[in-house]
Amino acid sequence: MEAGSSDLYIIPRYKTAFLDPFSEIPTLNILCAYYNRDGMPVESAPEHILKKAHQAFKDKTGYSFEAMGELEYYIISKDDGLFKAEDQKAYHESSPFSKWGAFRTEAMKLIAESGGTIKYGHSEVGNFSRDGMVYEQNEIEFLPANVEDAADQLVIAKWIIRTLAARNGVTVTFSPKITVGKAGNGLHIHSRVMKENKNLMIKDGVLSDVAKTVIAGYMEMAQSLTAFGNMNPTSYFRLVPNQEAPTNICWGDRNRSVLVRVPLGWTRPMNMIHKVNPLESEDKKDFSNKQTIEIRNADGSADVYLLLAGITVAARHGFELKNPLQVAKNTYVDIDIFKAENKAAQKKLEHLPASCVASAKMLEKQKEIYMQYNVFPKGMLNYLIDYLKAFRDERLRDEISSDDGKVMALVTQYFHCG
Image 1 (tube, rainbow, N blue to C red):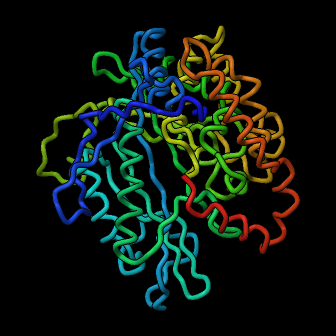
Image 2: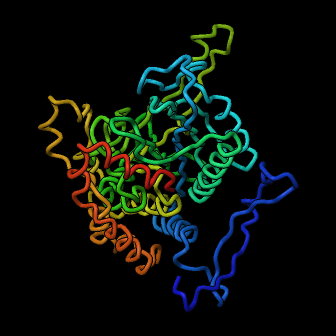
Image 3: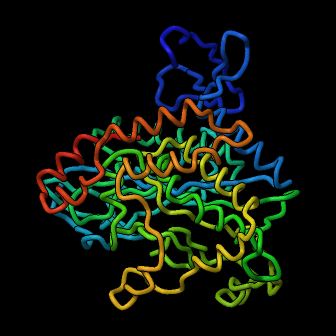
């Protein structure tokens, strides 16, 4: 906001209200919207931008857009030397090798009580010890919700996790880079297109043309989406091969080396429960409504509202392309693109930006698409472009990636981003 016109009306959004779980006296917490002196929404407010993005999607497609986040974080505590998890192999680890399952359970309980709709939580791949401390990665996954509600839930969840950590005398971080050679924190976003409570991502047991159209939009806008989802220099130290993060603009089924992954879905009626538990009913059930697609570039530095607004714009843009199904066909891969034998295939694919500066340039190139239908204000995009360019990190990854000390200094600087 300009200093000369910075006064705003702050209006509570009643549906976001929840009791503060950390207050000693009954206290209501609530998220708010921002209005100007004329009683109109502030066009540059991130929450309002997301609302406009979803409305434009609904107006132009006739569908609604849902999203869910996968919130990764590291929790850092003193190393007692007992039951150490195997380095970088702690995915779905159990106690006693996973130390902070009770913390994760408590966090999920508080998030649910605040209105969050949770799928489940688990320990993640990252786990290492350094300087007498244990760094343990965990993840909490949400259920699909209206895209605006999904953003609110993520913001509240991050506040709860940090505050709970402070109460426990430990540190948590959502930082995209933790240390050299270890997995950082991503913020993977699943999405699906709905009409009258029906999931349109599956048709006749296979991925639908609607889903492929959304994927095409993601492919076309991927390089500028990093401007909302990867917002400091450490983000681009995560977007490198073999670090649980994508580098190339492509998509695939169940493939964790790609930018957009189609998770194992419930594509046709089945009953695996009966096969494992013979006393259960033999009736087959249709779970196809669960199918999503997952975009994997964003991390804990993201502005959640702008990220989801950008993703919603990209999904809408897919429906505005002349040949979305051809775009989807051209960017599909069924290989691990990081393997040496697949280098030739990798060279044919476009790459994600390697710096904040490069992301800013791509946002500058594609900003007219974000501005369509009055979704993103031009001034706000220009501000973000200038903000990212000010990092001057265009060659930073090449210059310091081999110097562990300089990398760690950068990690420390942005340790509590987002």
